[in-house]
Length: 94
Image (cartoon, rainbow, N blue to C red; front, side, top):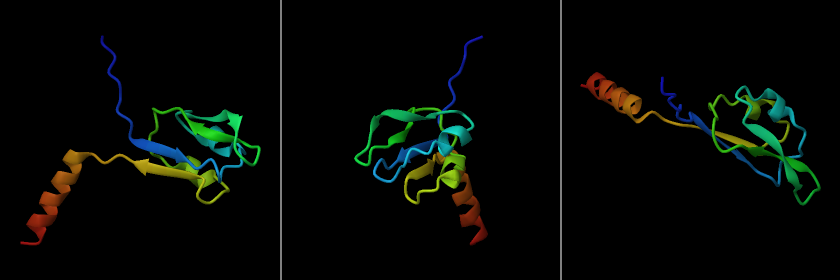
């Protein structure tokens, strides 16, 4: 059987100027798509880095991060679901 690749449901962005490399997000990430970089930021910390694929958009990494603004999680929007909810809202306003 052919394996189908799941589409990412989220996107993770790490602000390397804010990240202190504590690793809490690495341990908390359910799909394990966050790791610590080999390079240091200008404060001398190994910062968190996103693998580039596999994010579910759950936001757990954001919730455990002690540094405000270090992690941003964006959730992917299903265009078909958005269209369906817009139709329902339009019908409700009639």
